[in-house]
Every structure is written in C-alpha cells, then in structure tokens.
Length: 386
Image (cartoon, rainbow, N blue to C red; front, side, top):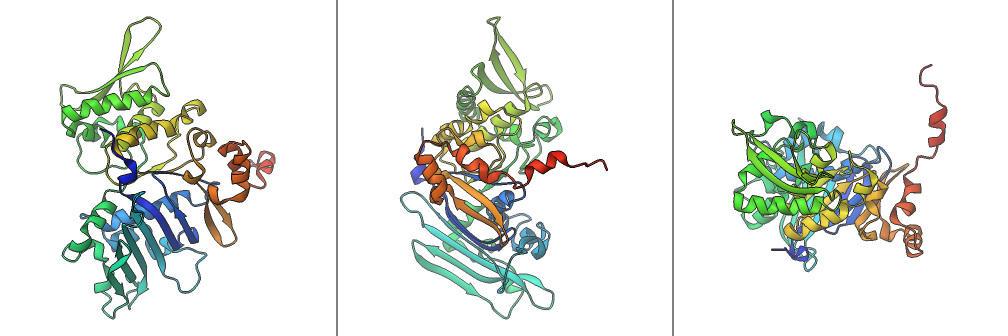
C-alpha cells in the first residue's frame, strides 16, 4: 500500500550558524532535496548536520561528546568564518506538509570550563509552536555535557523526536563492500552497504519478495532488460542477490551481485533503502558509475519507491542530468562560496535561475554556469610535471 508522503515526518527546515563551511544558512526542505555546488563548497558538510543529530541520539557509542569527537572536535565542527559569539547552532523543524512544525529542536554548543569540554549553551524543544523544554548555560559543566535527547530518563516527553532523529541514515553504497561475503552476516549499521544483503535477509520473505519486485520495476525505468530480483542463500548460509536479464537469444540470463555492474548494485542499494522507510535517507552522489541517460531517471525511480515508504531523501550531486526529469525548483538547493564562507539558496528563490526556468531553460542549464570555477580553463595549461 502506498504511503501518503504529505503525512510522513521529515525535516522541513534547517538553520545553522558557525557550522563547518557555513557562517549562516537556512533552507526549507521537501520530501526530496538535491544539493548542488562546486567542489569543496560544503555539500557533504551540510548533509552532515542531519547525521550529527542522528549521532547524538544513537544509544550505543553516541551522544554529544562522541558526535563532536568523531568530527575532529570543536575545531572540525566550528566554522573558520565564524564571529563572536562563537557558539555552533543548529535548529531544525520536523513535520509534514499538513503540519510543517510539529517539532522544533534548537541546539547551541561551545567549549567551556577548565577542560574546554564541549557543552550545551542552549537547548530548546518545541511541540506544535509551544516550547516544552528549555535549557541555558549552568555552572555545572558536566551536566551540560549531554543533550536532553541522549538522556533517556529525561526525554520521555519528546522521545518521539529523539527516535525520529535516530532513524536518519547516511548511505554511500560502495559496490566492492556489498560484494564482500564476509560482511553479509555482520551485525550493525554499515553506511557503505556492507549490511545490505543482511538487511534484506532479515526481512520476512512475505515482505521481502514484494519489495524486491518493486525495486526491479523501478530499475526497469533505467534498464528495460532487467527482470526478476530475488535473494537466496548459498550452501554456507550467506545471502546473494540474483537477477534475471532478458537478451537477444530469448532466454533469461541469471547473475548475482558479483557480476552486477557497480552502477546497478548501487542503484539496488539506494532503492531498497528508500523503500525500507524510517527517517530521512542521506545520499552522496547517487549518480556514481552511471551514464547520463540513467542518471536522468534517478528522480523518477526515487519517487516510485518514496510512494511506498514516504521516506525523505536528501542527496548531494555533481550531475546536472539528475536535475532535469520531474525535479522542481523548490527541490534543488545551490551551495556557493564567497569571502564569508559557504551559503545556500533554494533555486526557486534565485530570481535569475527562476526567470531562466520560466522561459524554458532546464534546471541543469540554468545552474551549470554557477558550478563552474572561474579559472577552469587555465587548468589545462598548467605544467604539473615541472
């Protein structure tokens, strides 16, 4: 049964201050969001805001201290372009089309105390426009070293918020890791796809087989010769993904994941993960290993799987072709760099791009000049061997 995406919880707005590349940034989000920009503009770092919030709420190995430490401490998190006050601030709205601000979470943190310990400077939790929890700086540094979200005894009133953030998942499928049979039965979450076949195996067959059929249907948008998709264990109990392909001889050719192209295997991993449901799915460059014709069909494939799960998809991309099929101006966010660091603009709010689009120019044609480095032509004339 299809899920009404308009009723599914998602991030609807994010506002950051002094976060990595960004001095200040704010953007509103739909159920799909594509972040584009030049190299090193901060696309991955912007996506990392959501991953950071998920890390805070993770029950094992998570929390504010671990989340900051895994990002090289406050030096790695705080923007080099920041001014005083030097707090790092994150504010997110979580809701749906019908209730965009069902939840609001605000977090500011900085180093404080004799040990320069990262501590909460401000924390607010809002529910339907009313503040239900508020913290500010206290003398007890140790008490402020944890957020309310990670304190199980204190978060009963807003546990649904913590659980939503916890289900936010980063995924960057590496085909070589998916093919590694040693990882297929390992427990735990692998953002690089090592747990993909195990997650499929863990799902009851009555649910797994219909979902694999839907993934195969979505894949046929890009590869018409693609037919059946099924999961089977080998003699050692290790799961393998098998697919049938039609060809000119008329008979089906069967292959498992070891023979799939990198692009096909990445697409299967992405589509399966979208169909799983849960919190937002964070993707980096889903176009890798795919030609432009297939890349252009990624948004329709995503939309097909989202209708079944309602899961929000937030993706970075370098591929202009990904932006031209069934993608709206409010779904594309342009990240650019100036003397004050990186800034982000929804292209619907950019007068020049919006005007070009209204006059028949495709999104990729309108955006591409903004992604081009100023002196790119000089690169071909450089003597790197000298």
